[in-house]
Length: 374
Ligand code: GLU
Image 1 (cartoon, rainbow, N blue to C red):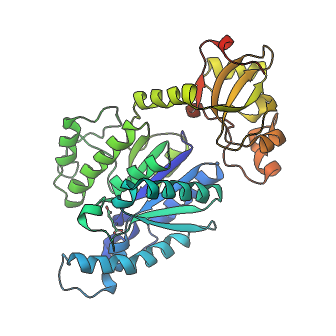
Image 2: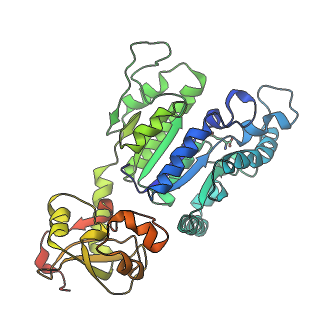
Image 3: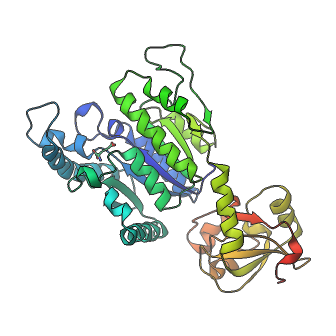
């Protein structure tokens, strides 16, 4: 798996298939995948639809397209069902966040959401986000959970967005009426042609569905977040994801956004400490594009918390070779330096990450001599 923090969006068709209320039919495989992500030290935020579908049978309505207020009542009762349905698959606690576009537009509320998510993740809780359908009017609504999931991925600075759909990915034409339709495995730029392909299907769910998924992918990749559209009806896709393979369509994160992040890391973020590496680790970081593992660190200098920026120093020369965001505080790091990553959990009792500084959170310095000595 090539990500550290992932937002997974699960649609109503998976949560409450066939309009018969909540079901575990598709959620079991998804929940198993989330648990495997947790075990590998990844952070997961779930964006789940399905409240309206789950509450549909519980609110009297005489029409195939109930009024907005009726749907809001369905969402209110269905949200409880949907949350209970998810919780039964996890030992870890689940938490509920109901938000609207109005909340994301308000700076203070945006920061509150961001901080709440951070603390939930630090406490190994699975946050489950949905739009607050009961209170949202059109002007305050995101309107669909694909775009909501992309916005959540931005708020929590995820490095991956996975949109689980009922179709294998994006095809060049509607696969249901064109048996020769080709699945597009990788897309690096979202153009009008891509939107046209998304709109070319005649299936009701897939038409609206694919368009909002492309909009979500566009938001995410512009901000450096890799995005996948994957078929959540197929349980084998999760094994492929766990192996680091792409079982659907991957939208590749923009390099420009990644460059902006690296620029911010290098020039704006103040270093709070230093980690000193042995020769092998220096080589892996500079020449092999590797993440930093505890086994290659031989000393830690300074007092810093998890998430702080640190200088990465070659202990032989004393020169800074890179800078990055450290996943552990100096206290915890001192207990695990020199160890194999598999030992982190048994020594600390937790393992938020098998790497100390992920490659994506690191910038290699071109001129090693310009930075401070350890
Ligand atoms: N918030 C809606 C629900 O929970 C779903 C919106 C969507 O799936 O895009 O039913």
